[in-house]
Length: 208
Image (cartoon, rainbow, N blue to C red):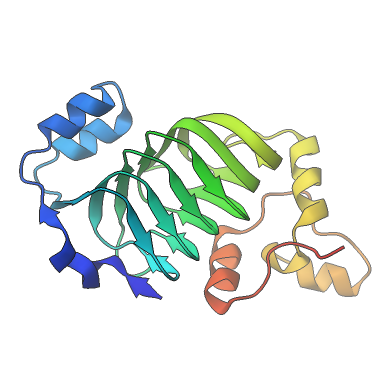
């Protein structure tokens, strides 16, 4: 896995974030993080392509599209924050930190937003096989989604739909119940288990 901090030399330091705040609009939650002078923001001009799995461990503004040929995890060794002023394209995305996408967010597999101290904002549409949010302040538009699990009090229908396409190993107690011939309990998939399987290169989705 590539950690973004190893690419710092490719980026400019963004000492004045006011222009980015103006482009986002002051009412977005990410604007507050951009104004926070204790956060050392970096900036990349133009599209950015990452050829492998990415651990985002810096605060970064991409003035263009960000394309990750793998999964993106913003809580590998330090909490990362990400502003993409174009589209964000990934295989999978797990986000503990704060994320803002001005365009569309497109994932082949899962998008999982977790933890309430940070935010998840997509001005365009989210396209993914599964979008799972858990205790996360979120603002987005629904695109092509096979499954959507809302951040707070998801209906049972959403949880059932997720359980039908995800492997039992992403649920707490799911493997034990599978050995007993039972489906996982009706709950969200575990963020920690999803992250672990992504890092181990193991599938999240059932093949049949």
